[in-house]
Length: 85
Image (cartoon, rainbow, N blue to C red):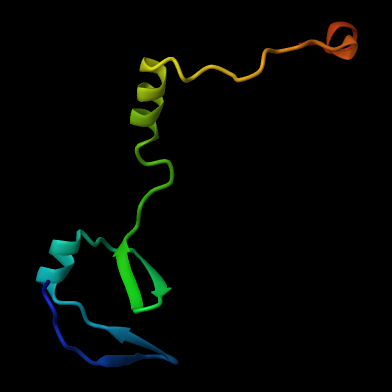
């Protein structure tokens, strides 16, 4: 584990942390980061896009036949008489 001691710096009414370039590269950080409070302190990590990896998960589900609806469609009287496309 690479540990680096640093100081908090003033940024307006807030505080900031300077992160060494090598640590930024090792952690895969970009321009934006996610920060959260954990029991042991702050956690700073790369921003993970929503739905990352979903394509692979859906492909795996389809390969296993696990991508079908769990209940069959049942038309109602309203569906048959009132609904129009």
